[in-house]
Length: 132
Image 1 (tube, rainbow, N blue to C red):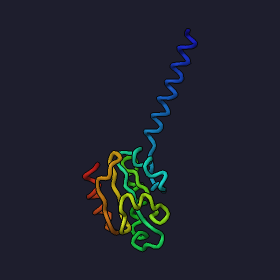
Image 2 (image 1 turned 180 degrees about the vertical axis):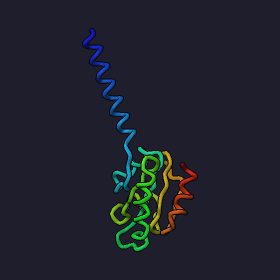
Image 3 (image 1 turned 45 degrees about the vertical axis):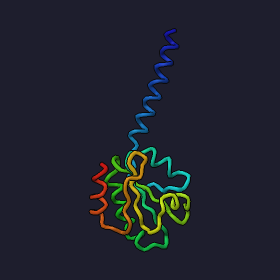
Image 4 (image 1 turned 30 degrees about the horizontal axis):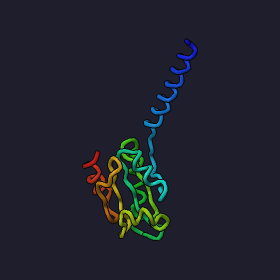
């Protein structure tokens, strides 16, 4: 009986440690998203910013360093992702991405805001403060 109880306690402790490790995951660079991974990412993290972009888009290339820096600066508070609209048409259509770059902002899995165009970091931060 004692051995059985110890085994149950050991397994419970392992599960608790796994859950704690998952919660402590800090992402400090943008995640590359696809049509198939998109929903899982926005459901997993409380605040997510998705940069919808394309390789041929000059304004997208201009804003990319800002997104990379913000992912590092806001690690642990906001998760940033990148979605290539040419390679992922399903998500692009779902959110009616007509102009790029477009930043989609999700809170608790729900689209709450978007920013269209290569705007300064200050504008992005001002918008994000509403949801933090």
